Amino acid sequence: MKHYYEKKLASNRLKQVYDLAPPRIRQYLKAETDFAIRHLKPDNLVLDLGCGYGRQFPELCRKARFVVGIDSSGESLALGQEFLRDLSGFVLIQMNAQKLLFPDEAFDVVLCLQNGISAFHVDMRKLILEAIRVTRKGGIILFSSYSGKLWKERLKWFQLQSDAGLLGIIDYEKTRNGKIVCEDGFTATTVDDKKFHQLISGISGIHASVTEIDESIIFLKILRQ
Image (cartoon, rainbow, N blue to C red; front, side, top):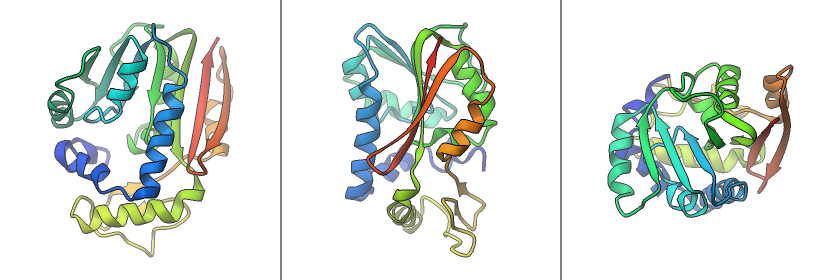
């Protein structure tokens, strides 16, 4: 299911996922964006990993100098060009987040939100190391995942997606402990605070912290030193 978001949950289908989000999920999404933009400065060059159709770009572009969004789905990026047609100060590029085609220390801030660290289905530690590589000294990297406290609301949201035909039928015998499993093979996992600490263990040249906000989101914040 590594390429699920490149085709089945791409473009307008991805947008539908957020359009049908119930109130508690909308609160979670806003809290996540608000936390991220608090770390941006007007002169910042920002990289957004797994940007999809640029759902968060209106807020990001208002706060930062320029935003580069990358995603593996060309279909989602094409929708983004239409969705963001009245916005300036950004570019969308099709690229693999684990193999970034940018030089070392290119960005002030790197974001990987909406549980991208799990949703990408790549080697999580390699993803973190690549994000660190392209962040300048003194820059910030933010990774987010779901808090276990949001489990019931998150599961309801995924059920709505399944009912709309955006996901396969949820296998409730296998769905538990933060992991959602669908009969078509799709899985959605999370990273908790313990796992985040394990992923950054032994990485030099950084200062990292893990925090929970809104009783819905776990953030890994990395300061490049």
